[in-house]
Image (cartoon, rainbow, N blue to C red; front, side, top):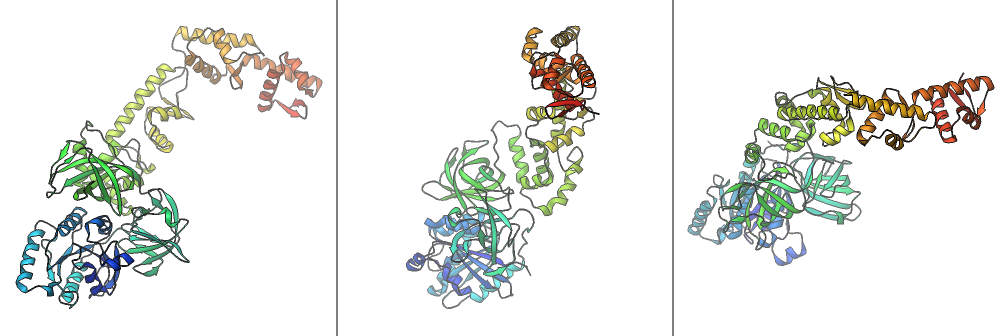
Length: 631
């Protein structure tokens, strides 16, 4: 027997007896709104808990049947394990019956029972006729091989057989993942006096416990779970597949709307584009043109979007294609989520499909795009991993791979086993790169470093931050260092990256001559050095980039010494200054800055800079307003 409650949903045309049937099975009137009770029709989702004959806990999501409330109906479908499709025996299959059946099929419902309600209102011949026409409607759908039962909620006819059929379906209830990111699409939000904000929904993935930190997506508003109820019972933790009510802290009711998702922080993206495979219903009356505006339903959310196809301009009824949905407002989505599309006006269900890449964007001319998207649809883990790894802008961690695939942490062991033959490099570091992506990165790195060494032969390499910004901007610093350490021809020296066979230095007699000219100018300026721009002008050097490389080269070789930003002194001049200060202090004891300025025969600015450098080198030390030698 399954260990979690079975969640049944209703579906069917308005006034075919869905709510009455639920009340007969559970004792609960799911019409809770005053308007529902006064008008006698369901407007919003209703919920009821009950026990199956097997003893297993179960719950009903009762959806409205009127075409005006399809949005509410769709919000309830995502949480169903199985459906009870209701057809009134006195009317038979109606337009909303067919649309609800289409919606159920598109959104991936795979189990259910068809129920002919109000069966006491018709004779047996009519009932047989309705059953036959209903079977014809169900041909080719997931309900075709499922039972059709005649019931009457008022007299009790067939209710026992229906309960037994529901219990049989529940025996094979599949488990849902309690690992991976938590996702609770919100279908109701309200306030309870003394408690505050409460939301409800069907937990589709992960688990939620008291005091857990989550976030609302879209908006990424952080919340804390103050209390948890599962099917009306207070609990410490709720698991995937259960109907959940959560009392939330740190958020007002007005900040939450149906369609948002409560999720593990940072793990469910908020996107405005969806790369999808879309199929149009064969029953649609018109083709679907590029840039058409549609209503997109995903989970409990509804957003307006426009459709952009990758290999055509029009989708005919019954056909399928790859496309991009560009949403007019943000939506929370993961790979493999199913969605529904309805025409903008008048609203009617026209198709739906599956999300391949949340937030993805492609151009029609992109190489091998359709073949790649077919790999995603195939579900072949190796093909999908290869595609993700080779088209990622940066190395990916195991967690990032799982999130891009829409997978759970319980798949990590299988993923690691598949990754080893697909990746290059030291996976112990926690990063994964596809072979072709690796080869491309290595080729680009070698070409970049060779060109950089040619253009900057006086530098000991390229600064790592510059390399990252110009070549690996999307990479994390840790991932870049890991990658560089795997390349045998590359050396990292503090902040510098270079090819191991590269040695910094002048590459021609002309370049050496310019270096000698700079050295001479600095030595001539002695203890009154010029600033860098005046040095460059004095040396008649036009190429400013080469000049600053030369400054670094001379400083690295200790030919010149930095006093402050933009001011350097010749090393020979500093040696003479050091000797003069040392002799004066030995002979005369502690001296003021003014006395030492006279010793150095320079202005106060340069005297202070030279003395501060000698302090930093622990040759001199400050003693109040004077200086002495470090003993």
